[in-house]
Amino acid sequence: MSEPATPSNRLPWRATVVTLFPELFPGPLAASLAGDALQQGLWALDTIAVRDFGLGRHKSVDDTPAGGGAGMVMRADVLGPALDAATATNPGAPRIYLTPRGEPLTQGLARELAAAPGAVLLAGRFEGIDQRIIEARQLREISIGDYVLSGGELAAMVLIDAVVRLLPGVVGAAASLTEESFEQGLLEYPHYTRPRDWEGLPIPEVLLSGDHKRIEAWRRAESERLTRERRPDLWAWKKKHEER
Ligand code: 9D3
Picture 1 (cartoon, protein in one colour):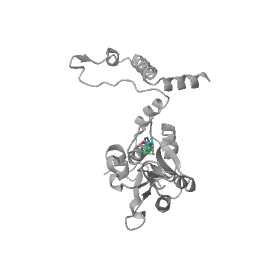
Picture 2 (picture 1 turned 30 degrees about the horizontal axis):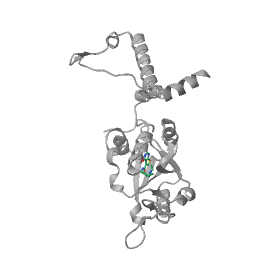
Picture 3 (picture 1 turned 120 degrees about the vertical axis):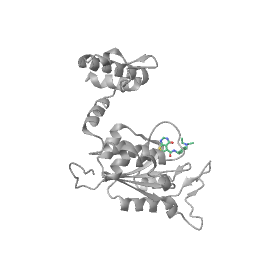
Picture 4 (picture 1 turned 180 degrees about the vertical axis):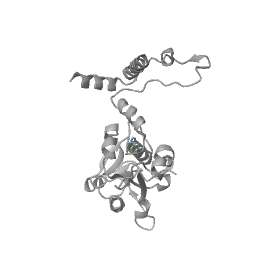
């Protein structure tokens, strides 16, 4: 038996995914932290199947690109009604198109989306979607990084996972406090647990010293070293913002 300590009166944060592959959802979002929160009603998920809005005997959703070129483009006259159905299910939610040319998803953007009532997420397939739908339905374009996926569904799941863990009651208070410290632009320090020796590899002596000041200083130094080595971009950003 588990009930929320403070039951919320508000509607849950709602993700409505517009996709040709609704069977991919909830997928990994049904497991672990996000899955438990979904079952607790802390957020809600629904899908709109683009195929249901397909045109003609073949339920066509795509066509050849105007001006020529490779691949196919998703039709505005299919996506328009599909997005309008999603908006009817999820009124007031920002409409997002997952695309490799979008604004990068960051922790800051995830926080912004967590503060909204939810999100309508359009996952594309093929080469892309008709530009007119982006303008007519005011789609915000978001990318999850500089690599090429086969479609927007996995990107939608990544975005949802990043947002859901920020919703009130999803992650414990203690975990969210340590997480905040890592939003200060440093990579995480190395972790160890028992056994003390594993395959001849010891745990760093300082972590067994019980000296909390020394432990904190060691972790800080390791975080800074890793950030400098692996993320010179983050390190430079951090130094610049410390100048002020
Ligand atoms: C040849 C131009 N390609 C763009 C790099 C076309 C193209 C490739 C792959 C268009 C769409 C896709 C499918 N990707 C996504 O839908 C996608 C995505 C991605 O591939 N990388 C990072 N973030 C995202 S969000 C959606």
